[in-house]
Image (cartoon, helix red, strand yellow):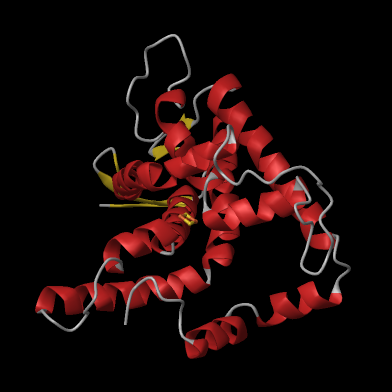
Length: 260
Ligand code: FES
């Protein structure tokens, strides 16, 4: 079986039953415009928050915690926000994600606004050959960088667990851990990464290496079929970590246990 082939009917069906059951029902029962309006509000708020916390606000870190918008810390003494040097890659990665593309083309450009709705835009469709949509082709390149950033976010969680020579189990550590798990699930379902792992092969069973790739591809397919869920959950968790750290910076106590 080729990696570029669509997932089997069985996998597709299982995905909709397992994860999208009630969501699917809600989507089918709700008026068609609810989904695009929800996407406009959610993506609009996320974009505004990301711009504010990365460019305008004070760098977001507190005690053992570092905001995902500011990690890894590449250059912290320069004239611009330290987030600028790193946050562009995950943001372009997310903005060029195949799932988000579908969402914002429907929600912001009404192109078309939903399934079984007529096209609203009458202009010539130029796909992703012109600016700014040609930037979507950066997805596979930002995927490499974002994977490295994700490794640093795991390192941040590990580092937050040991603070001033003690084991530090704080509420913030838990929120950061949930965030990296969700980001890992989101990245693991990336279409580009999945193709990198299992694509371009004519035969999956011809060697141990190819069989290992097939097994990894199967796992990634599970995440891929639920990509939209991981996309929304991880977007919310990234903001949640940053908001929590900013609350700590403003004086909120961090419930924690010190060991050792
Ligand atoms: S397709 Fe969504 S992250 Fe790559």
